[in-house]
Image 1 (tube, rainbow, N blue to C red):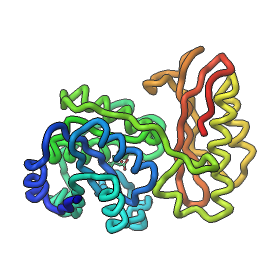
Image 2 (cartoon, protein in one colour):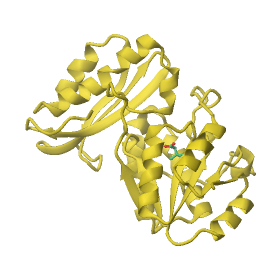
Image 3 (tube, rainbow, N blue to C red):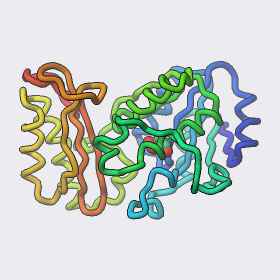
Length: 280
Ligand code: PAF
């Protein structure tokens, strides 16, 4: 039986009753199979699981999709029940930010927060890290699960946990893909049929990059051949998101817009070698 709570006070009571090691799965709801993989991993590594469902306004800019971001708490709760989560914390904006958002004390994301997603969405990672720090304090977890799909977010949460000595084991969970290779995302529901077809250039670019000694050029070639995709960035970086290595293991990261929907994806690649397995 999953307990649903909406307030910090009720969360504290529910948390006090949880046995052993606790894992938290922070989400913005609209749960899909990618989140299901997070819930399952959390079950494996802990005795009890807390899921948070909160569309965090701090990480949306005024021109972004805060108002239209999909919300489906009943279905989210059903998935959490089915996966044996113990507690779902679904607070209101007022519960999380009772004194408003102006002048709020925040977690500054540092230089890694200013590249890739951070360059395209200024302030995004400060918003993410601030809410994640709050959720960590409220749920007091031993472990936390995040998807590799948001690879930079995962790296930044790891960095925050290390820099601020939070003592939480951060678990990265591999990206879950549709049968055609598109990474699962809550925003996929916004794609028209034509946009979805164009979006498949992203997993195609990943596949080509993984088969090439020059992954960046290979990915660019595929993405450049899809006029209906507006590429925001395509980059190769070190696995810790530092400068790309001249040779060896690296990470390919892509952000692109299909219509008005912004999609991100990433995968391991090897520079200077015709490498590794398939992203799909
Ligand atoms: O990945 C997400 O869904 C969000 O960025 C997170 C981690 C729940 C913070 O709002």
